[in-house]
Image (cartoon, rainbow, N blue to C red):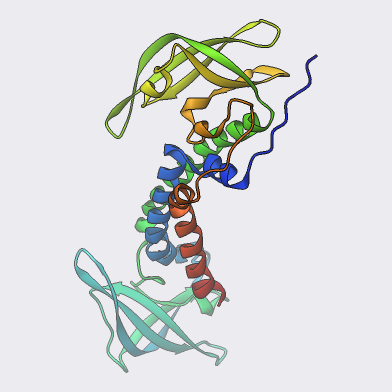
Length: 284
């Protein structure tokens, strides 16, 4: 059997493969945008009902003060209401409850409730323990959508990187082009099928889905890579952002620094920006 090829892939080119392409770029942008809503809403949603099980203790408490949170629901302000109370054991506790359009007056007598044995979860009856209700959890759909696109993009990117390192160069001929029911940015996604032969002359077919089919139709024979030990494992070079770096002698060039900065903008902005927020908010 023919020995597998090995090529050295520059770090700049690796980054362009792993982070470039529509799915990766869209995924990182959407993840970064969606996490803003996740931290602001989902992480401030009320899940206190998980603790309110079994016997619920009801006791009188006293209002300390009320603060405007700057948050609102349907243009109605959400208030942060501070209170204190004393358990039957004589232990004094302070707590915070939130309510939309409802604030307490300092010194006002309140009805406080908490699960038996867990006064730390106390709340003003009829109010919640976080800024927003549980319903805002739906915002997780935004970062999850971005994450799904990233995972789909990485699946293709890791395949491409493996083929850049160990793939055998060949050429494929387009044998069919079919319109799918999917659209990306209003453009129809097509499924293109290419036929190619390995080093032993055996024929294989490879399918690519793209909303930019012209990239794979500008030549009668399109360059592609496959694995010697697994010929069906293949990819079209012109469908990759780093295809131009694959030289005729089989070596791989460096990805231009300026273009790399553009590709890394959304991933770095998301990782660094949200990383700093997490460190300042939950660690620092």
